Image 1: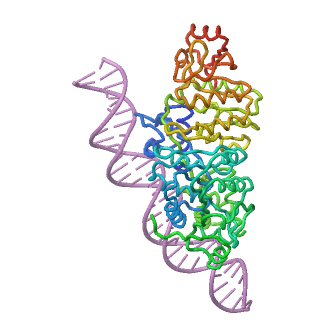
Image 2: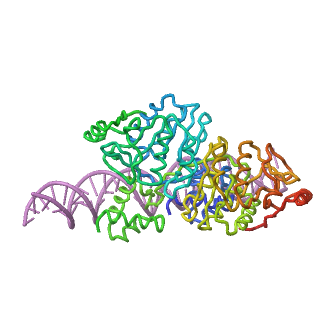
Image 3: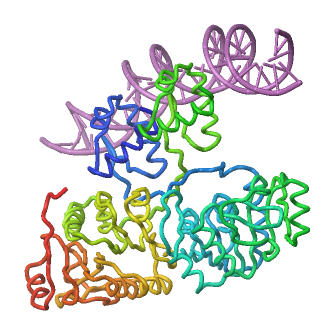
Length: 258
Length: 258
DNA sequence: ATCGATATGAACAAAATATAACAATTTCGA
DNA sequence: TCGAAATTGTTATATTTTGTTCATATCGAT
C-alpha cells in the first residue's frame, strides 16, 4: 500500500469513527508508529486532521472535493498564457461568465485580484476557487451534476441563463474548424454553451492550438459572431488565415506571462 | 502485445482493483518493471494515473476542496442518529430535497446506497458526496455562493425551486419554538427554505435538541403544516408536549443506529 | 508542582523503489 | 533483406520510504 493510499484510509478512519490513536492506526496498516506520525504530520500540514497527543482527530471542518479527470496539465504553459491574456480582456467588465475547464479555471484564479465583480459559472472547481474572495460574488448556475466532470448542465442551467446577462463570457472549445465554427463534444453542454454565449455582451473562445482544425459532436457557436478566439502560438498558419478570412478574430496569447 | 494495448489494460486494472504495484503489473504482462514504469510515466503525463512509489493509483483526478468551519461536530452521535432515522423516512421517494448542513450531509452519505433517486440540493458538500454515485442524479440549485458557507441561496435559487417538485424534503432548522415555528438565522436562506418546503410533498425538519426552544431571525415554516421534526432524545419534555399540542409531530431518533 | 508513564521528533540505517545510461531486441518501411 | 527507429531489458546509481533508537517533551495523576 502506498503512502498516499494509506493517508486516504487514515482520513476514512477518522471521519467514520472519530479520534484514533497512533497505535491503533499502526496496527490497522501494519506499519510502525513513526510512519503513522509522518502521515499525520502531512495530513495536518494539509489541514485535514488535527493532531492530538497519541493520535489524531478529524479536522474541525468539513472538507469536500470535486474530482475530475485531468485531461491536460493544468500548468501547461499554453493554458497559463491563454488565461493571462484572457484576464486582460476582462477589462472593466463587472459580470463575467466562465465555462468549466482547466483554462477557465486558471483564468478564475487570476480574477481573485479583481474586486467588485460577479462571476457566473457552471464549474464547481471555479466556485471553489473563488469562494473565499469576499470581493467577488459567485453565482453558480443550477443544473444536473455530470458524472464525469464537476460541472453542471441541463434544462435548469439553460433556464437560468435565460434570466442572466453578463458583460463578457469565456467559453472553452473542444474543437474549432477553419470556418470558425466552435464545437463541443457533448450535446447537452453544447446547447447550454450556446445560451451562455447569447447571454453575454462580449464572448471569447479559449482553446489551446491543438483544438484548432478539429471538430466535435456539436457546433454551438461561430467566431464571426463572437469577439475572438484566444489560443497559443502553436496554431496552424493556414487555419489561422482561414478563420480570419471567415470573419473570426484570432488572439495569440503572449508567452511567459505570469 | 503492443505498448498502447498494455497501457490500456493497465488502466483497466487500476480502475477495477484500485492501486497496483509495478511488480504486479510486470507479472501480469510478463514484462520488466522498467517497461511498466515507462508506461506509467506516459499515462501520468497524459493525466490518466497517479504515480505512487511502488506502483500507481487510479486516482487520476484533480481535486478541489471546499472547506468551511463546521459549527458542530459532524460526528456528534445525535446528528448521526437523526440522519439514520431520516434515511428510513425517505421510504420510496424518488426525488429528495436536502437543505445544506452537517445533518443533511450525514443523510446524503446514507443515500449512497439508494439507487434511482434524484437529489436536489443547495449544498456543495452534498453534491461532492454524491458526485460519483452513478445511480443518483444530483441536481444543484443555482444561486449565489455564500461567503461563509458552501451553499447557495438568493433569487435564482428561489426561482429554480418554483419549477421543481420533490417527494420529500429534509430541512435544517436554526431554531424551533414551542408553537412549532421553524426559524433560520439568515433572511435570504429562510426565504429560500420556505420555497423549498413548498416544493415538496412531504417535509421534515431536522435539528438536534439544542435547537428546540430557541428562535432565530426568520420564521419560515410551521411544523403543523409539515410532516415532522426529527430530533434526538435530549429534547425538553415540556417543549415536546407543546409542539405536539400545537399540531407538530416529533420524531425521536433511535440511538446507536449506524 | 512533581513524578512516572507515554508520546514525539530527530538522526541514522536498511530496504524498497526510481532513474539514467546503455545494450539487446523487435518493428517497419524501403 | 537491410537498416533506422522504436521498444524493451539490464545494470549501476540515486532517491524515497520505512523502521529503530534515543534524547526531549507532554500528559495525567497524585
